[in-house]
Length: 170
Image 1: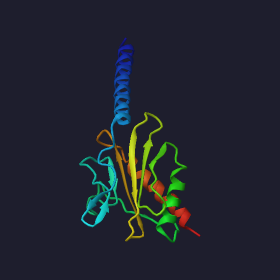
Image 2: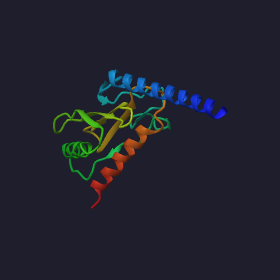
Image 3: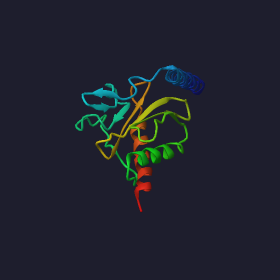
């Protein structure tokens, strides 16, 4: 008798959690990206700041912000910004769930992608900025909904960093 009650309660809890995740995933797909794309910051163009939630990382966050800061990516063995842009686009096209929304033109400094998770279909926005004055690729990866992403955005950026390092090695 007790096992039956516990089983029913467990199934109800599981059903409730799955329903909540499905609702969040639907909200993620329907929501417009929040503060997407470069904006003018004085003379510089900059990626948007991360919101006050831990589901975003950015190489343009304050270095002392351990929750949001992530180091910028290095050019993948490219001698020019346009080559780095092309190599980054080529690499991004190999990621399952990744859709390039705006690749810019060769020599431009911005790439915008969306990443859809395989299980529930949550959408995260991933942007890259290749400033002319620096030999780095600034990156911002943010979840559209929810509070925590359990480190998914940081892991995604680090996986891209590792792949670009392989391109950079002799």
